[in-house]
Image 1 (tube, rainbow, N blue to C red):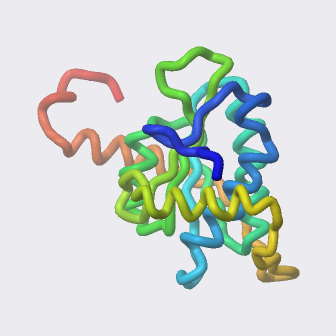
Image 2: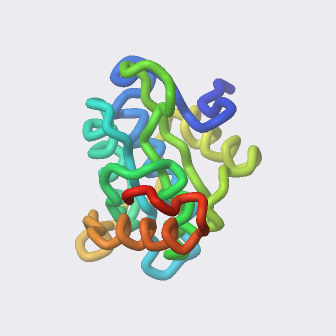
Image 3: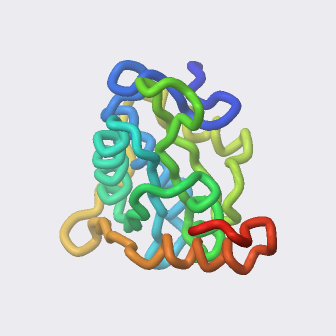
Length: 175
């Protein structure tokens, strides 16, 4: 079996290694595995400012919603914000589209579980198993059961409030 996940998620050159098709499939698989036991499941999606972020975000959202799960869009936020908000809002999962400090042509998908932490290796292997199966036998809800994409305009404010309450390390900084 191939290997998608590295040390910190799935990374590669956007539109070559990390394609919209890959993001779509990862969205479908993640929604199926992490949202199937939930009532009204949601997956939070955030991204950095890379040009390829919007392209990958659109594909990821299509994959998530095609599985009947709501994609809650956070917009441009930091990786720690996605982790915190996933835990705080009790989402089924969170995904940040970012390649951190890597060159601009790179991008990545980092998936968090409902506790806001990196996925265990066993779940990463399960996602890879579905991905490398090269068939898509996952359910495809129809009609009112299709997931929605919802822009969450309050999430960043909630995260900033959390940072202000977090302690004196940020005092004097403009947030």
